[in-house]
Amino acid sequence: MSFYTGTQAEVLFSNPSAYPAEGASSTSAVLLPTGASGAYQQPLFPGGFWQQGRQNQVVTGLLAGIISGESSATTLTLTLALNTSNNTASSNATLGAFPAITITSFSSGPFWCHFVIQARNVGYGTSSVATSLETSGALWATGNSTSVFSLLAPTNLATIDFSVNQWFSPTVTMSTNNSGNTMTLQSLVIWGEN
Image (cartoon, rainbow, N blue to C red; front, side, top):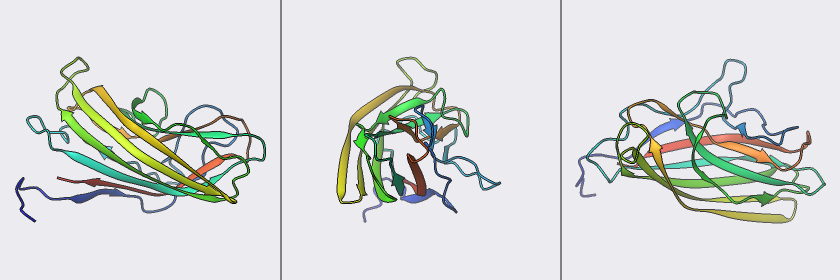
């Protein structure tokens, strides 16, 4: 370990308990780390977290949990986003959306998602000088005897203001409206790599 940057990796967020199942009976985007019974927890990048003059800031993350899907043809889309308001799925600034995966007849199947956010530029406001974040990732899921895989191609978000709070807001969108279609986030961990 060279300690070249004078910084170190650290866990920025690790959820203390599992979140409730989301996505049932909706075809709209639904926030995964929602509040429930006073146990509300959502990761936050506070204003100033992304530092001007640095291009080597990296954040990595893990999402893991359970997916259930009805017997009719159903797909699930996982989207990673930032939001200046907490506990909401609306008005998100999208870091990236994974291509849809088929979850037909999933019965409490596990999923695992790893992602990387690279800061390419840091600025304030929402013009061309704003913070530029590039995100990529991979999503795996297994239900019954079926395994599915989805890759998030490097996606750039160039209109984020670094000087204000940004809540990490992953959402799920189901293609069909059914109470059997759910995604339960059990593990959410965010690391600051340097």
